[in-house]
Image (cartoon, rainbow, N blue to C red; front, side, top):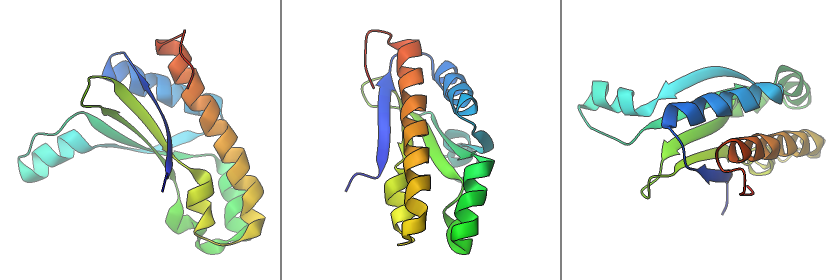
Length: 138
């Protein structure tokens, strides 16, 4: 089962994180949390891991609409977007698939919200792809 939407680009890791954050902002999402998995695993376990960040993205109006329809939806928020180094050296940007995520709630009233978030995430991924690989498509 596919549960993410993603793109892979060639660029500096921090530059891709910054571009992803900017593209999210352009689509009305704020980053509520930024978890550096590499640093956390090093600190907590003494283990080395590839560069890997989890960005907790939230669009307040869409979150409000979702919570109004389904009060328990907060357990699925914020929507996570991850940025990580792939085995082949590319930087992958991967966003949770809102259709899959909101489908868990089994509430048809959430379908338009899932569609809206999906469209916005697709534009985020396209913007990142265009910034680093202008000749490519997401």
